[in-house]
Amino acid sequence: MEHLWSPWRLAYVTATGSPGTSVDCIFCEAGDGLILVRGRSCYVILNLYPYNNGHLMVVPNRHVGTLRAATAEELSDLMRLTRHAEIALTEAYTPQGINVGMNLGRPAGAGIVDHLHVHLVPRWTGDTNFMSVVGNVRVLPEDLGETAKRLRPIFERLAKDDA
Image 1 (cartoon, rainbow, N blue to C red):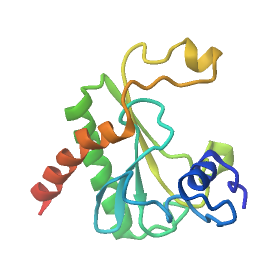
Image 2 (image 1 turned 135 degrees about the vertical axis):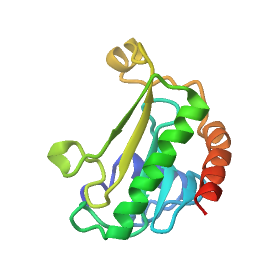
Image 3 (image 1 turned 90 degrees about the horizontal axis):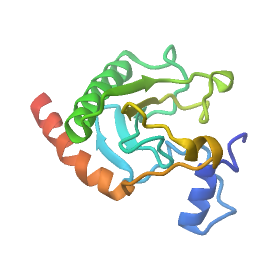
């Protein structure tokens, strides 16, 4: 397993205290703490190591690594929840822009290669600073729990609007 000692693996070991437990996929093993909403075949999850406050990912429930391998229902739900994530981030954070993207394959930058996911990262002019460049550190003024409290009600409202 290439990602066995990734930051996700270390976070799992820290959270569970079981270094001997094999984690095949962080998305398949994701607990509800970071998950903001579940759709028909996908869900929205907070990034454990966000680039900015509000960094989200939209992930299929099924372990699928490419768009080609995804079903029509999965692709539809992936896009519907990506749209909801854009709406929720805009409402909660008022960003000046949002990066929306996927990295398919390790050479393209995928950290988790075998489970498709879409990143949404709110952006503001000047949001990168010297800490990331010089100190290899990110400074986030908001705890992930606070991020979840801000976003969950918006996702719940959007899900009701779809029903």
